[in-house]
Image (cartoon, rainbow, N blue to C red):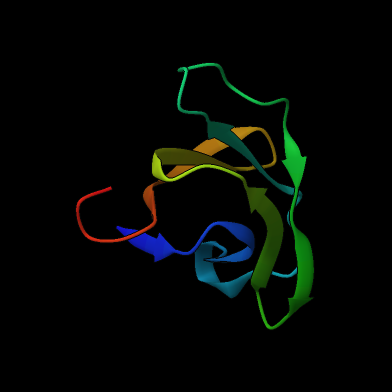
Length: 84
């Protein structure tokens, strides 16, 4: 589980085999259980990708991460303290 404070945060992702030639996107599951459109991650080199996202409210979110349109990872994201 990732834990952040409310505001702009960065989610990092390591591509399969540290590949630099992937299109990496993510969808955030919001507090009301709606899902964002696909959000592009930025390739920062050596198969590492990053997504900046602004979380406005305390609570638990989730992020599904895709490589070239195929789901490869899932993260639970807690915004706020340990009881969020």
